[in-house]
Amino acid sequence: MGKRKGNTEWKELKKAYRGQNVIVDTQEWGYIDFSPQGMKEVFGGEKLTYEDYLDAQMAIGRDIRGWFFLCHHEVSLGFAGQIERITQKNICFKRIYVSGMYMDGECFDGKEDHVWMPIEGFEDYQVGDCLEFFAETYRYLKTSNGKQIDFGLRNPSGIKKVDSYKLPSDDDLIRQSVNQIICETCMFRDYCYGGICIANKEYLDGMRKSMFDAVKGSK
Image (cartoon, rainbow, N blue to C red; front, top):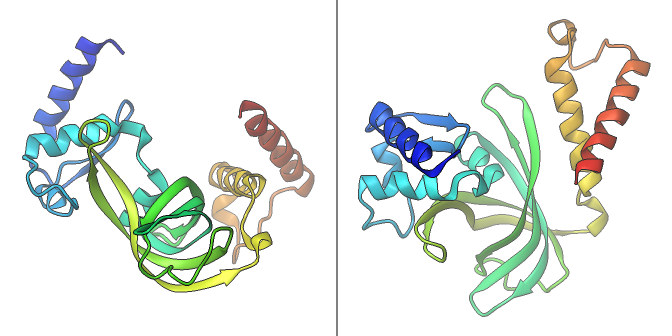
């Protein structure tokens, strides 16, 4: 999309939804929250104008931590990750594995790489430790690359150390995504009973393998 066309479409989008309590999923900039109340939730954004608030969401676009976004607006079931770095005030996880549930009861899993959190609650752990925990998702303003609004984690609870093998691998997450896509598009979806799949097993195995190979090959 050209810059001029993009600016025009952005202005038109803001004009259409300004001040409304809605979240709009856009093709170009991802999710945009137009709610004035949502602006008050942004940590560090006390001086943002409403216009700044919208533009900061547009600026980060689809680089937003989308799995944290989902947990923030749906239901968070927990997080897990391996400690990569510890500083005096913060801790960095090499990767955070996300588990959550949509309001309709369907679950989702994902990951976010290189996640920093305040060290409070993690003082007794070391680099290399693998942890499971609950945490609050929150919106915050970051200014390292202009004004952008992203999502993070804070106020951990229920922290426990786990063996590294319990953390899902990239392949595990791909398989979960593939299974979810197959289920969502299956012609028998409305006829499954108690979570038992009635589709042909050979067909499912073939679809899983071909889709898994396609995703792996694109990375």
